Length: 170
Image 1: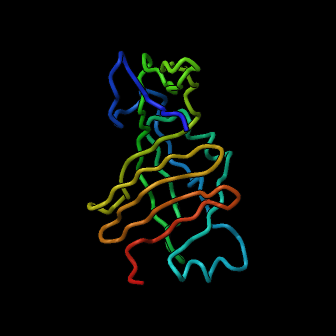
Image 2 (image 1 turned 90 degrees about the horizontal axis):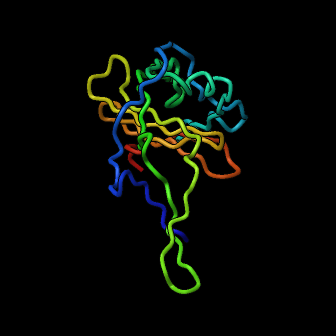
Image 3 (image 1 turned 90 degrees about the vertical axis):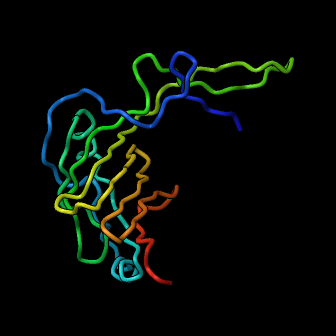
């Protein structure tokens, strides 16, 4: 498997920064509860199957700030999120894969930047909260800390995105 490195003038970049983009908007969450018969049983166990609304995702792609309403977290509950667009690269950054050539040398192979929306922020009205989401056309990955509750948002190939409450005693 090739090693992927993000560089800027030969230095690794930290996963911080906010992209200077368009304005702020209030939108419905691009993630909604998946309408399926087993949904209630899964949600009771701390797992919520989700569905990605690609139209809503496209609306937030160029926003610097966004308030997402009704982000589902567990059975019958949703949260409003205040998020900022995050970037892990700068305009001068290069994404490369390091490959070994036939003669044993290491060669940098440039890669296109992924088409991904990175968002970070907080839950509205909850002081002790943290939200980090990465959303693209294949799904969503993320982490949410809401007071004493913790959630992981994940997409497995071939399955809908899910949100898992990880602090439940089990």
